[in-house]
Image 1 (cartoon, rainbow, N blue to C red):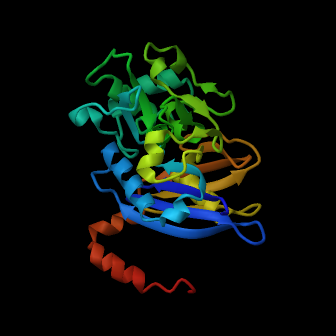
Image 2 (image 1 turned 120 degrees about the horizontal axis):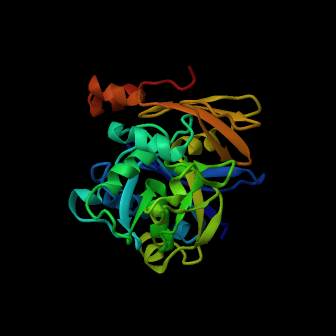
Length: 310
């Protein structure tokens, strides 16, 4: 049986699955796509896990047995606080703070900790500000609790090991890609042990944990690969050529441009992807605004009428 790769993307409005293999010419060939809305409110991590299991269950069992690698992409900045074994806290404390949530009361503290006002972490809408709000909540001072982004928490479930965090998912928390270290004074804080051990996108971290393999119906030898953010996954899928820029229009909007060098500027993100730098910016304005004017049924019908050739 030919080996297959499985990708899961957690976006703003739902989950997507892509099953891929090598074509006759050796190029990557997309075999199957599935998508589904979140089965619970977006902020509920249990819904992310249930959605992942449901989507993988749609695949034919024989195809599932051919999957040799799995990776997850998630919304950059959606952050939760959980136990070191991945267990969720009770009640509202177990919910994630979503990527679009701003924490203005933490702006000054985040800016001070990051030490660079142009960093994505030095703003009210960065993960660092959300982390400070979470750290001020129930269980403050509990050394058993850790901070993990959406894709990293699910990656931990796949591995049965929640140590890791992929670098692109942690830029807004204060990870410095050029220095390969946490920015400013972040690493010296009393709560710094709650931060993940950072790995690069594409790193093979190990095999599926027995519980995850059984729940997904995948081979126990399937390798877990560090993924990326949802917008960067879209860039990989588009496979831009030299000089190409991309507009990723989903529920929100992101602009991405490959660059030979990193660029630091307010409002500009910069991460490594597939051996090059990816410079971008993001807006909370995107196709999600259509839900204010159209029902789901109307959107489905209007989408059906689109001619992609024009």
